[in-house]
Length: 193
Image (cartoon, rainbow, N blue to C red):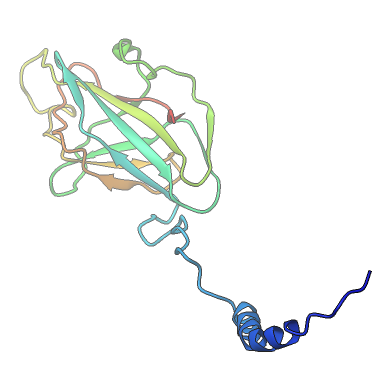
C-alpha cells in the first residue's frame, strides 16, 4: 500500500501556531476563576472567641417562658464547650439587674433539656449548639422589690462558659421574671441539623 503525504497539514499547523502559543501563554499566566470563592469563616463579624451567640424571642404559655439560645462557630477552628452558658440579665441601659440564673432546675421539669447532664460539645466551623433559658412570670407573694422582681430585663449577657467572655444579645421579648422560681438555663447541646 502506498501512502501519499498530506501536503495541506503543514500549512494548517503554521496558521494555528499563533493561536496555540497564545493559549499556552494564557494558561501559564493563569486565569481568573469563573466564580469567586465562598467567604471563609472568621470574618470581621465573628466575635473574638470564634463563636457568635444569639437569642430568639421566648415562647410563652400560661406564665412559662422558654427562650432558645444559639451559638454558632463562626471561626476557622474547632470550638469545644462543656456545661452551661453563663447568663446575666441586663436592663435597657445594659446594667445588671441582679437576677440569679441557675444552671438546670427541676422546677421547670416540663421543659426538656434543663436537667440534662452536661456533655462536651465540639463544633466545627459553621456548626451550632443550643441551650434554653426558662422562667415563669407569676407572682406568688406581695409585689415588693426582690432579685426577681427588680425590673424587666431587656438584654442578656451570655458567655459560652464561665471562663469565656460574654456577648450581649437582645432577645426581642421582655424578660418579665416573676418571684416564684429563679430562671434556669440548660446545658449546651448540639443543634439538630
